[in-house]
Length: 176
Image 1 (cartoon, one colour):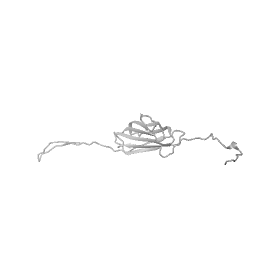
Image 2: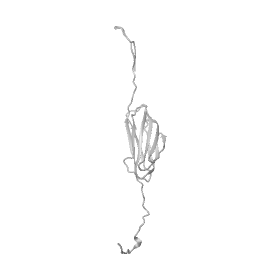
Image 3: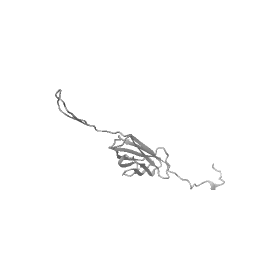
Image 4: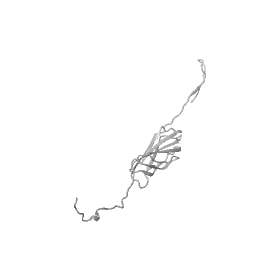
């Protein structure tokens, strides 16, 4: 109030030199299998990592250990909105990525499913925030599961006479 004297003007300000600011980011990962899982054929996975913020992330880790029934795995990665990730690799994924708020990194992995594969193919990918970044749990891993759907190309051929006389023996050969 105007005209009021402050009896202790030395206590009118304070400084806090010990405040720790912890970056927080909401990293999420979504994994899906593209198409059927056919033994002997190529299987393709899509793995999308996003950062909902509020802080940018430098050095988050994406990991994915592919099942033993998948061989010759290769992968590519494309980042958006100013993010970065390794362009390509082969085998399991263990990649460092940088994601600004609203950024994403999309991995596409392909491999050949073993001829003897049966049942289902399940595979999990995980994103881990770098040390010092708070990331709420709950959406940091994703599993893609697909039934193994064997396919066969069955052909039948028949070889034999084109006409038969009644009362005689005719021989046909059927090959499957």
